[in-house]
Length: 346
Image (cartoon, rainbow, N blue to C red; front, side, top):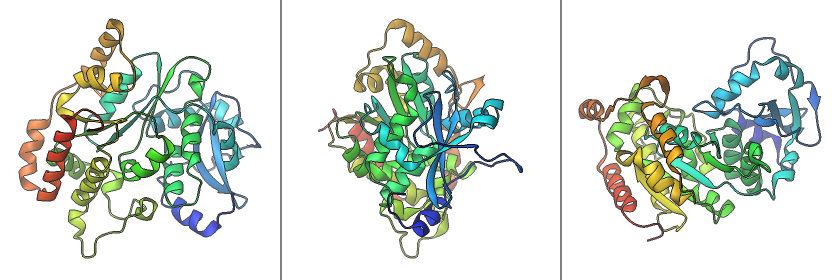
């Protein structure tokens, strides 16, 4: 287990958003020394026999078609093959991915800002392998941020999740969770030359969406702040926590605004910015067929593809009249708009 004490590991892992498992679900049958074949992807981590281990599931070659990795993971978990072939490896199995190529692009975001639309559009190009908000990656980022895993494992974890592009010539792109922006210094150390993009939106609209259906990171006590070197301000009103966390994410992105590998994209520039800004920043210049495929994706609701897309900004702005948006958060949003209007690195 790389020498880490078990107690802090167990404490942090207890806060991970573990996927529910049906009662009587069979335990993994195989414990391997190395990662299984490339059709298997890492699904998460657990503690087994007092060791930190990775659980692997068979995904096949065309499984990553859902908006989020965890949705694909849930579908795969129910397949008969995964009832028979679920397996574990020690965390050291990641060593075989330590020298794998870095992703071609990282997508960071404020949450509720068009990042799901963006990843679905990126995935419309068959030349892209897109991993979106994988629980396993979240585990590794948080454990590395807490100093319980070496930082190189963040690189190895992404490579393990992007195994489908091995030898295929495909590009690999990773959408992280919104709170991973808080780990920007770690990500920049691990991926010093990898292009990244930060998506943002008017914070009033973001907070309305979080008020309707709060994400994990805006629920007080759900995110392990120590993993990101953060502490809760003394006396913070719990009702103000979503705005505080939203501002922390904005400020973390802004702290990296002079990185020449970064770019900032306003929600209002979508969907055109995917082909005009994000893909070129990732070194990709889509052809007419790819642009047409992405336009088709942009015409439907990213989270409910059976419905046509309709803008909700006006309704959210009206609803935001009843919410308090701190002046400091509005100032951070103004700085993000300025960063989006500035060439990368300036």
